[in-house]
Length: 463
Image (cartoon, rainbow, N blue to C red; front, side, top):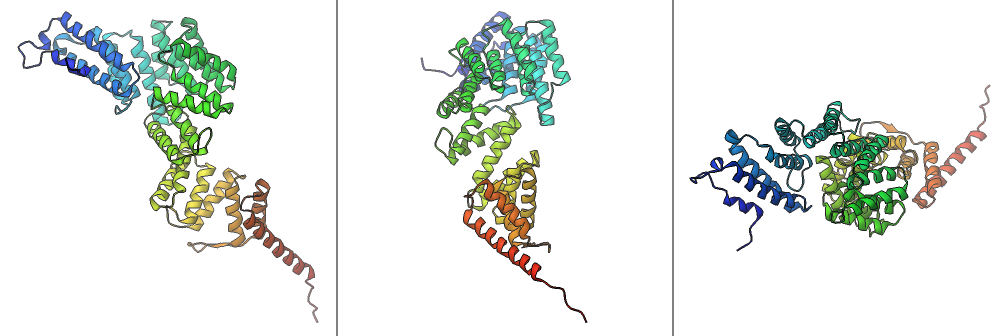
């Protein structure tokens, strides 16, 4: 017998043209078919492989379509709730070619609750959906939304030991930076189930935030021990972060790679490896690979914000720098696009302000405009008075002066120029040392001559 895809097995269902159709199938037979196909789909879904998950989604949907085609006669039997819930989960998270669709996910959850109003899984997922919608609306992680909290409270009223509610609450409070509440919920869950891998990883993440690496590592290792066949991704990533913070960079990279083997869309690992490639930390510097990982991270983040905004902004900044280093015009325009994107999120981002000044100054990716360049450099200086490149640019502006397209004149100011350039030298004596030394020497000569001329001046003798 030739091999078949799991979804091919649906061919044993009678089709609509057959004398015997699904509606007429006795309930017990329909349930047997459902159990078989649900088991196939469930095994594929839990495999962790993206292609298998996509196949699982197709089977779940086909099961549901057959149920819906018979809904007039059968309604939604409660035995089909697991399929509805899996579909809700799939659309809540999204993966591969499946886009995250919160409205679809919410619809499936509400259907479940119409069949079983005390279903705690559906209540908890509705709480997560509501919180995620709030996050998308505001663009910021904030305190748990009141409506979302009501769903979790309802789940805990129904089942005070509801592991999913405690897990979700811990995760949401962790992302809201309320580590105390997150730790409290995860520890409650561990009192119920001491081997709960996700809760163990969560506690480890809290200790990691407090830089208590020893305790964090203990919890991450316990999480990995609790399920050796399906290693917890957060635990693997957490151990990688400990290696990075303790400067064991090659070991950190190895763990990030293991995370991506388990979940190719893990935003934290994509960001960490991309950043490592760009800076050459623990791995050979490679802008091409840095771009590949960080571009994938940014694409995923913009669909579903799973990490902090700071990681997103840093990734945008690195992508902008990669493009700015390329000489072609399209790359210059891409650099401008990324730096502007950062400034929409953070108007005082010193690096993006400096680069916008540089791009306007050189005319790379945008029309050359020295007045705009000067204004961006001044803003960058206000945001970070110690940035050596900004100081150098401002020193040159005041050393040479400038005539802008608007007709405005920036007068030479050797005193200001000296202040900026001396600061450059104090921060890094080797930075453009010849040019800086020549300008400072010229300024000193000029100011000395002015002082001598001033001191030798005499009042005119009047008759």
